[in-house]
Length: 358
Image: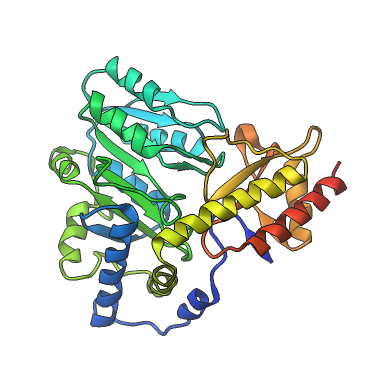
């Protein structure tokens, strides 16, 4: 199967082999060595000198931790979104009692920094701004550096970022951009299987932690900070995922981060070119293309869900959609261990499946 979902991603043979490792002491020297190695790598990937923490959870677990450790009931939060995953970030904050104001952009469009600045100038006492770095509902990469600069110039609010579908595929500068909390996960461009949430927080976020009133136990940052001093995590680590991420780190370090980022951009451009060669359009606007997935618009009268099912029967798995975009797009993942040959095969099958379902 040519596995082209926008996450989880297909695993490199070296990573698959690592998951066959027998269990070890999750607080022993071997585990500690892997944790410390991965923390150092993820600091480079996230662009931070702050501690990076790992937790056995989905990506939403690490995203949720940003909220429950920094906000209190009634806090004013600005949620800036351009798709389902950004909207869900805001809905999560609302569940925890935040007073959420929304600034929403159309599907396929970037978040515009000047609009965020204008919105903030009309608000007072904003405690946090929620952002999604890469919107995998639409295949859009937002200009995070520009947006965070606009926020910093107009507010002292915390900046909390969902980077799940971006980390490992695009350069990120947490410290330089003034990001206070950033969350990602193992199963996308970090080249591992699902099961590990990853997050980093700033000194400003720790100050907010001291004031936050939201109850937390499993995701309590203080426990992660104390355990990381020993090279461990508070709860039993998902060891097979840890083994896999350690093997994925081998591949990332051998290739080098600059080349990893360049490869993702190159293959993303190749995917769009192959879609255009089929006479198809992509959803993302010209300055917004994601390096990790491409949302391809279906021709008039063609149902994307049926095309997706036909592709699966022909040995290619791509992502569908839901909600307002269901049946209108297919999402082709090109992150992690992927080559042009993988994409070429997927797009050839896409063309055949569309023809079959016209």
